[in-house]
Image (tube, rainbow, N blue to C red; front, side, top):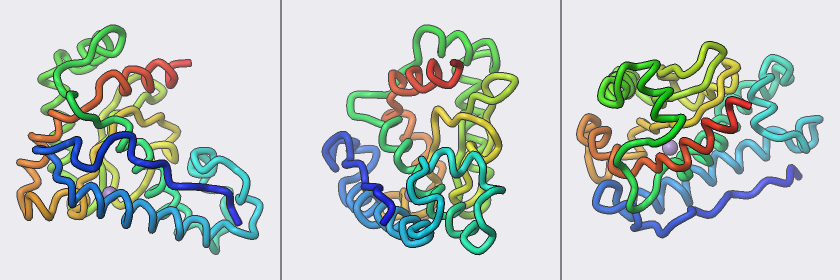
Length: 203
Ligand code: MN3
């Protein structure tokens, strides 16, 4: 069996209230995230990929045997994307980034406000299920959306902030109001963690 486990949520299930409710966090982490992991393990167990880091597998998806490639793309992506998602959120968060990250955002997007507008547009513009991403790519910071559980790693980019816009991420509290979820989500962004990922990605 592939030796992978579900990282526990790094804060209490209700820590992101009132922006993200406890029930959503419980179902999202304990059921959805767990299911991506279980299905990934099922797909790679008994293959050469069993002991490889999942982030590396996704960065080299073309070399995954065709028979399991879709399962790895969907469930491996789901596993890794959610690992990042919990980390880039937190209680007593929100506000603005500092240091090098703040400079890079200003330099690339003009201002924090224009970055947020662009990211929000990516989140709102994702038809159906998917994610909005802030990544470090070959030419620096970039914002885009990807469908389903596709990972920026497969594009050769390092994700440093991601927003899950699958309905399972917000439907219990917000129903069809994705815009309200996205607006409120900025209150839980853990910029300290994003800055840490930014520093790692630049190395
Ligand atoms: Mn999700």
